Amino acid sequence: MTITEKVAYLKGMADGMELDREKSKESKLLAAIIDVLEEVSFSIEDLEEAAELLNEGLDAVSEDLEDVEDLLFGEDECDCGDDCSCGCSCDCDDDDFFELECPNCGMDLVIDDGVLTSGQVTCPNCGDAFALDLVDEDEDEDEEAKD
Image 1 (cartoon, one colour):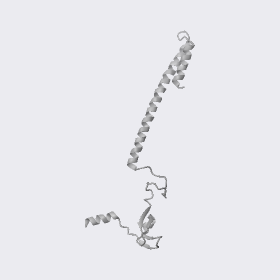
Image 2 (image 1 turned 90 degrees about the vertical axis):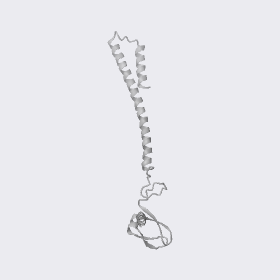
Image 3 (image 1 turned 30 degrees about the vertical axis):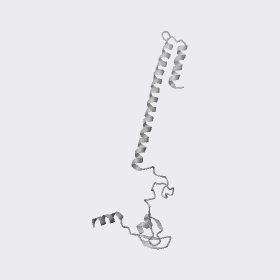
Image 4 (image 1 turned 120 degrees about the vertical axis):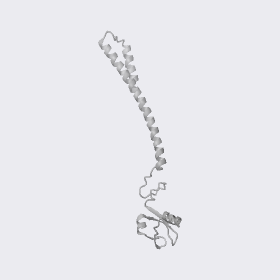
């Protein structure tokens, strides 16, 4: 039962008791209290409706914001941490590991930043050790374009 319904019930009880508002001070007081309760219940009902509309609007704005975030930042980050082996498309392992091909046997090797910095790689497949050529491909293309 809502507050408005409870106040209407009290008002009905007061009417059923046939309280004479003009003769008794207590009846006047009870009638005034019931009138105030009725106004308060209507105000609360209006506030509840306004809050519901605000919540619906907030939900719509939140969904729109999620769409904008997806457009700007891509899909949600995965929670796979440093060793991404979940098969997702988050590319979270691209920052720490690099792929290259062994010049001797052609096997694809995955090396980390530490090996890249040392400049020397030993292939686990054929055992051949080779030096890394750390030239930026973009710089090579720029130099070729100038020539």
